[in-house]
Image 1 (cartoon, protein in one colour):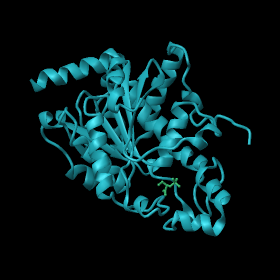
Image 2 (spheres, protein in one colour; image 1 turned 30 degrees about the vertical axis):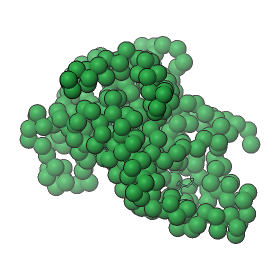
Image 3 (cartoon, protein in one colour; image 1 turned 45 degrees about the vertical axis):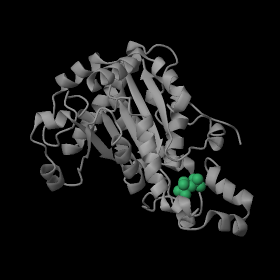
Image 4 (cartoon, protein in one colour; image 1 turned 180 degrees about the horizontal axis):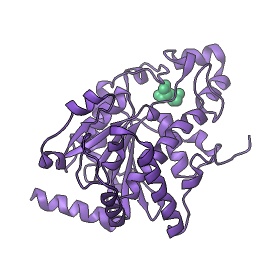
Length: 329
Ligand SMILES: O=C(O)[C@@H](CO)OP(=O)(O)O
């Protein structure tokens, strides 16, 4: 197979040099298009970042002026990616895909440990898949965060959900973190392999065939999604909904799945279709990226001895941590 780099979001491909005003205009245009496209209260997920409040109020719709003020203010943001902790089907070695399986006790512990590792990194918005294992991971991780804000899931499935979920205190909103759930970040649909034991599937179909289903880029398992198909929806969502938040300086955490995150990492790290095949993500280990001047720079996983290095990378992160230290003294 010829290694190639798929272009999911051609108008947003990042320049390796300083973000030119030309590109910046495109990116703002994109954000505005995304605002235009969004209808009704779906708008709140994107424009939450445009207002200076922490949780989008599903009723209020901040003006474009708020948006452009906010755009001018920030040029650096953190992006944390976490694959969910171990699920009950990971433990049983079953293909899981779109089946909505909760965490094991070990998975709960992994999520809490992940939270400790990122407890000094700012989080303004959280995106999770619509599956409980990713949502549990995000929520458990945030119980450890030093900022001590409350993650609140936004419900925009219908008018009543939006209206009934309103918050009437500005102060309480400031102490909250909006959590957007999106099916596009779900694990890839594993088709007729869902619920099958991985080892038994190898015994039945052979190691090579199963490896092809699990790790090839564009060969789907029977009636399921290939990584390419999963990337199409996950990366498009990332470009349309999450990247605009980073552009305006919002620090974002994404809790998702092995394959939806592999496809997003492929986009962030500009991996080829060949390189992504060997990319494996452990459960519950957070990865940190810094988004600056239109580029994503991978800082690795802020764990153990590397933690000091992670904070040393940017002045903004160091300042944030110092502020947290001062507040807790
Ligand atoms: O079963 C699944 O849904 C995934 C992730 O656990 O498995 P794989 O590692 O084969 O992509």
